[in-house]
Length: 286
Image (cartoon, rainbow, N blue to C red; front, side, top):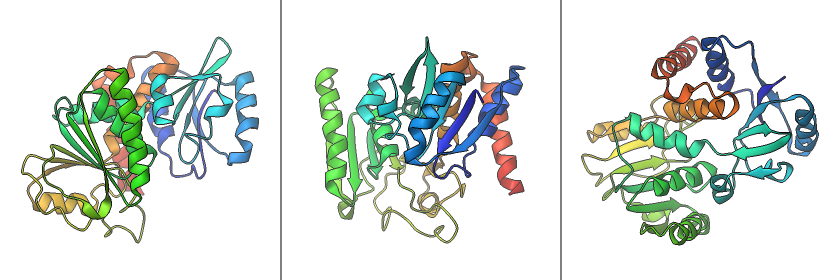
């Protein structure tokens, strides 16, 4: 088993469809699988991987749990305290976070720009950290994090404040309690929570209203099933463009595969379109 994804749970993951499509496209004999791993079993899995593996992905809740077992991680992964991709290089296990560039690629694919943008993010979990850093890295002018627990939002703005100093940029950073949410005065609005995900929760929203949202604001929701959350439907009522999380999922996957194999999948638009088609077909058949 050379390539796989670990998580708890992991049954929902569509990573095998992404990576096996890439391997098939490039006529590679490799296969990609899912492995259900509890937190207490990560060490055993990593030691086994050292002997016979080549690369693996990590999904919730292990993106931070995996770090102590690796030989090194990228600076970006260190900043966001999350690894979703591991590769073996000269016998050493190195960790990366491809969610950061995955989000940036999605924004670009949607015809938007992070450079100079005013970005508002709902949520302060692992996805929010990666998205906030992505916006910062690509030149956002203002980043505002909203969360029920303001200290978690402040953790992200503090992380970005350090990066602000290190990279001599001048991004304005704000942490606010979710009850103070205001949909106005932003170019890009991101739901980085799981509110609206799963059967029985489709009608839930992370905020009460999108009142005041500007006509040009684009809403990104990291949820991809359902393909249109209630929050997205509300944005459409205001006339705003929306994007679900499917493309971010695809882009982080092709970037990860390039770290392992170097096929150049992240630049292959024909392949990316084929992955997107297969995932959409899968959804219809479910």
